[in-house]
Length: 450
Ligand SMILES: Cc1cc2nc3c(=O)[nH]c(=O)nc-3n(C[C@H](O)[C@H](O)[C@H](O)COP(=O)(O)OP(=O)(O)OC[C@H]3O[C@@H](n4cnc5c(N)ncnc54)[C@H](O)[C@@H]3O)c2cc1C
Image 1 (cartoon, protein in one colour):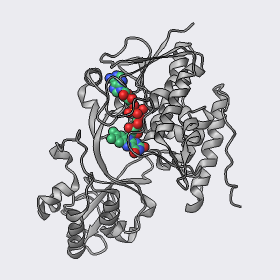
Image 2 (cartoon, rainbow, N blue to C red):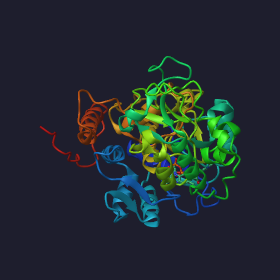
Image 3 (tube, protein in one colour):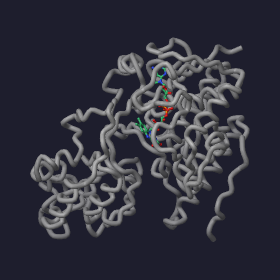
Image 4 (cartoon, rainbow, N blue to C red):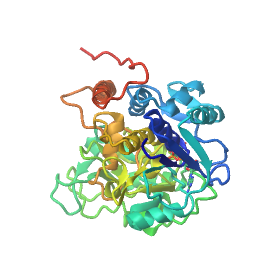
């Protein structure tokens, strides 16, 4: 018999990891500090607690998160089983009754004879094979232990996320490529100029935009180098005009003149299909961001694939400290799953839990570790965690920008379906090659347009 697997943290990722390893025939000890101790965001005594929204986002398979759900279902996801069993009406989204959902997930753990449960806070990193799934609010000395092992610069405690737009949705009549003082028309930044009048409107909207109230455990101790854009704006107009929106050296080739202000967009992925708004981390509500950032003329009709945010979040600098199988390079017997590994969101955290559970079982049973194809949604998350091109790694939700671009020209409205067709076909082929039986029916996809 292989050694027992320890899973620390019984949230979404931990439950998935424990059940995936048990399905592979490995005995699991699942340890969570609840109900003895609660993080500032957890309140339910049950495992698998949804700490905020009750939505698992889009259930449409031609969306990136819909494709990820389909792949998880094929892998036998416990979170998907619980979600389907406890779904509440939410249009095209999959939302759940959170209490019933947690109880269902906990029921699956209780019904699995290979899993034993323990309630305790773990403060030390184990010296045998384990999955760390303690989430964005990892408690106690475990976070410090991780910081020591990975060097503290590779463990972050806050997310400061700038909004991301798709390149194809930027109005290129109102934007130009160029580095500060670089050759016109060349460079890595896409510059979005504002005239004095446009600036005035943008600034007025920014300083009056609604902000997300801070939770009591989120003290507003922002780093000077990472201040929310609205906090900088509140210090006076010049703070932004001499800061992230400085126009100097960024003359507009269309006019030959220096604009009053410039928003710079930087590549977010290797293909350059996604761009982030440099310096625009923010606590504005999503609704306010929708209003304020569309006052930047080049972004008036842009597709925002992610809004900005700043919140407490413990996560690893994955590209620097994790190997391609989500193991700590400095301690390869330790897998890291869930939000702590550098993905963002309930569905993504759960998905990475399944993968870590399967691979931890493979390690214990001396089988080859597996990695999903990069064209699948699960593979896209793995690619993100290994993306060493990003200087400042930030957790990400799944989006099609994390997958390789489609070959040939595909109309915009057909891209989701094309991504889903390619991803699912490659995922099923990978499952077969890896000896994994599909756990559910193969989902139906829209026919390819002629
Ligand atoms: C305040 C907040 C709101 C969020 N809202 C959303 C949202 O609305 N939608 C969304 O998609 N994502 C949201 N997220 C992001 C994230 O996807 C969720 O937090 C998700 O639950 C992460 O799953 P996980 O399994 O990695 O961690 P968790 O679900 O947090 O599970 C971690 C578990 O580990 C336990 N634990 C922690 N430390 C220890 C320890 N030292 N020893 C033993 N047990 C320990 C905890 O008790 C917990 O049960 C939010 C995050 C936060 C912090």
